[in-house]
Image (tube, rainbow, N blue to C red; front, side, top):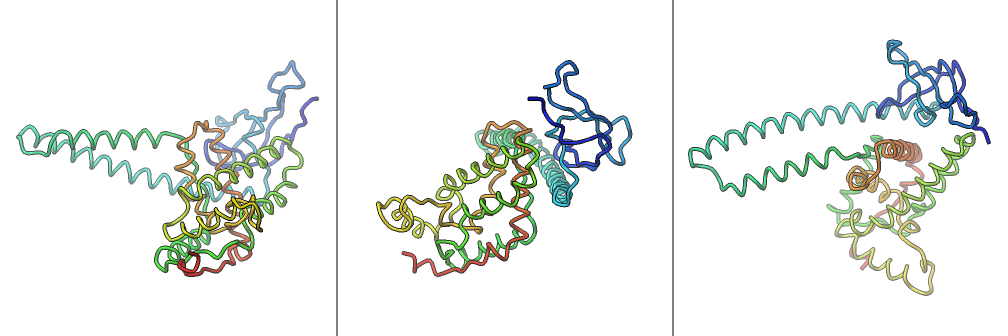
Length: 308
């Protein structure tokens, strides 16, 4: 079956160039292989405000419809990229200073008045590990300000007030993801590839959440509560029998997962294209959750001792 073009000539779109979505216009449409009408479409785009020399032929996966949601995503991605750039510059400056310090240590070493060489080698090894980690693909999830505030409030409740979220949550992670899926799916009804990506992302987040909750997402005071719930999950009978974390924990713990995504994805073998797409999808979910925060974060806390 021949593919159907999702975009048309002269259409205003948003187009990815590296990690940022830019305003663009489609100048032309053609099959990638002119001799094969079943080959995928590619689109010649002109980036708004850029010289014509930047015009480019791109495949469909680089393009997004010019919708309000996608424009908001583009704005957020740009802000996150700018913040990341500033942070990177800060790290570079710090490393230059560290390099200067190491030179000073080397000079002192020649004078015979430095710490042991083992200490210096260990420090250099740590720097090499950090540099190796930083070159791996990562996912800088767009986290709206109100979710950042909720993340801090949650941290204070658990670590300072020694409280835990009352569980089961009114809207557990499975329900939240299902609600987002139902709202997002109609926006992708014209593209089976986009629908498949949505399905994969929802399934992936569910799996990540189940596997990461105990090992990464929980604070110390929450672990007794989790152990009690785990026994109920594994029981033969009861309302939580055969259930799991995504059926009990809610939005507070879900955004903790979002905040740890850069480190988690850096440990996978995902290529840059897949990493960027995952970042885009989770950012969309994060923005949607932000808009619906009053519904999904209407959660109470209770003293940790009461769950023992």
